Length: 273
Image 1 (cartoon, rainbow, N blue to C red):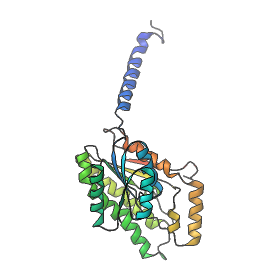
Image 2: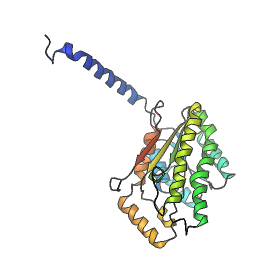
Image 3: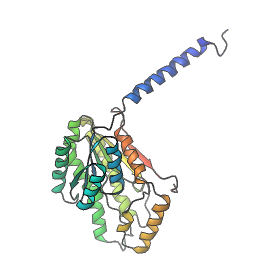
Image 4: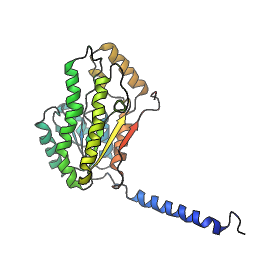
């Protein structure tokens, strides 16, 4: 009778482990390099967008950054070694021209990172129509316009990727002052689901990235001083560094071609779940 440690008894398990290791070794070799990848980032003049541009160029990617603040955009682009593409995503005529210009300068597009967005807090009963419109135009319509313009280039890439930066607010309930903003981010999730199905046949993968609080300057656009101060404290105490989110964008872009990352959600370890 064979003992439990006898090679004959262990052989099937050993073979299984060897195959598992071999499979994982093969999978590791198929991760895509970021060097030479051609990426367009909207909202690239600050925060997550600027951090992502820096992370990608550091790894050899060719990056274009798009934003409406031309002066700040050019400064960031010069700093990280990216191509500045000044454009306002709220202008439906400007978006396709900007995307085409970026693709022309980069020699095509392998990925679009839809990062541009507007963050306005306030209750509906005393909210401002201009704030609602700003969020809808940037968070939803701007994302749609940029995606539509980029799809032909991403399809020609052969391994195109579309990354939509959403928010944890788009995954659950909303508070008294976050309802409209959260609504636009819920829309990002729904649109991404539709795009994922629509673009599957074109070889384009669609990923939603949902960060929690992030250390950015978005709070400065909140009109109510008290709410602005509270929001700034929350983000300072519990926010992710933009570089943490940028690292996840790089992770998605480096995924093997046969792996489709549907969503990545992340919060700071300091943020209350």
